[in-house]
Image 1 (cartoon, rainbow, N blue to C red):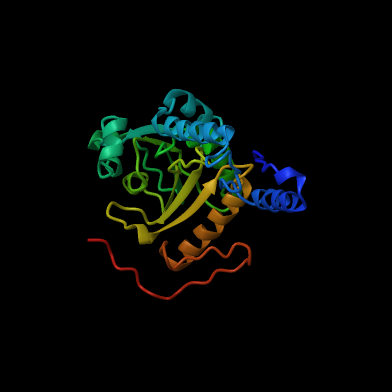
Image 2 (spheres, one colour; image 1 turned 60 degrees about the vertical axis):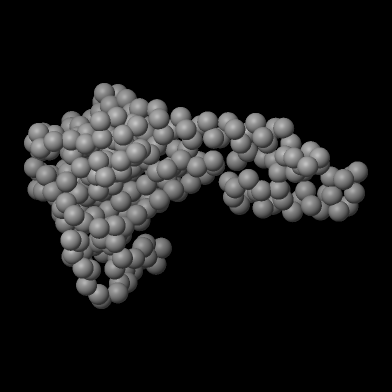
Length: 272
């Protein structure tokens, strides 16, 4: 984690105590706290760091995924050669302006290339709002999921989705014929993290599923965020719970740390 410093006032005890206080807090967060000041403004170094973080976030949104290279890397994991499904958004500009188009496959032919496996679990790897996150973490995260799940479930070949929102995974999961689909997707970059990956789990995927019918594992970006093994452990617990209840979403809770699953016995209304 990048360290900041406050300059003690004339080496006073108060200044040293303040510096120690902020130094301790900064070890627990990536937030920009206790940055100090130069006159009435932030120190020049902090202004430049903020601008650099903003530029990194913008680059993470707009830098395209190298589909060919990514597909080659995924193929080494042993699940088969991935297919590519683009969304209805024609380019990055339209994707950002029209979230609705990112939830739909480009055309029926795009889904016809998806092999109907009938497996227990399907994986959709989506660029989302940070293709960089998928490039940095997609392959090792999928490898951790395979290790955690392959002894218990049958796994479908992976699918790469571009200009994609989470709901595109419902169409792909239905085409795969899987019981549960996991969408690994680049999360919206912030000024602290530009390469955070999320996993969205939907049991019995089909077009029209609502967000309340999904479970999310967020903030995956080791070493500062959630690690791959821990994220895979949480996903395995959620899958087990969803299969037990026959549904995913708000009724399924992450209790992987307690080795138990609790749920609220309520019905989830179907999306209209």
